[in-house]
Length: 118
Image (cartoon, rainbow, N blue to C red; front, top):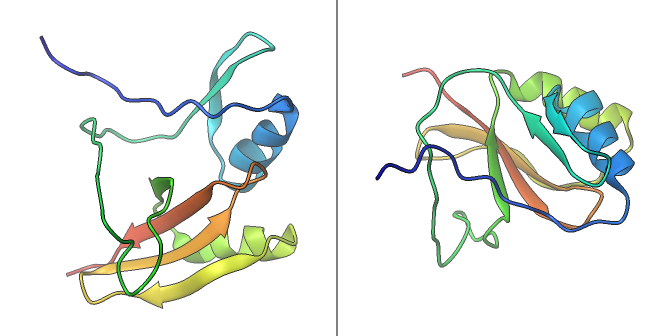
């Protein structure tokens, strides 16, 4: 048996707000849409992962989701243009990531990050 994917499911009565935030701002594409559920996917190839943490690093709370992007500055610009409140950062962390925290339309705390070049 092999786990091939883990997909967090977030309950909401307003799936359209998820499309607007995750597709329009973060640039994800719709992988599945049945009206009552929409699955948004990014690009790239990754091994399924799940993390458990007692804190979020640098004195931050544990985020609900971590989303890795290839250009954090571009995402930050989109968030600011959309009027989203940044909860933390952008910050260059000592463990080699550039990240920010923002809440999605459902109040979930997102850790949006890029790994910095070595």
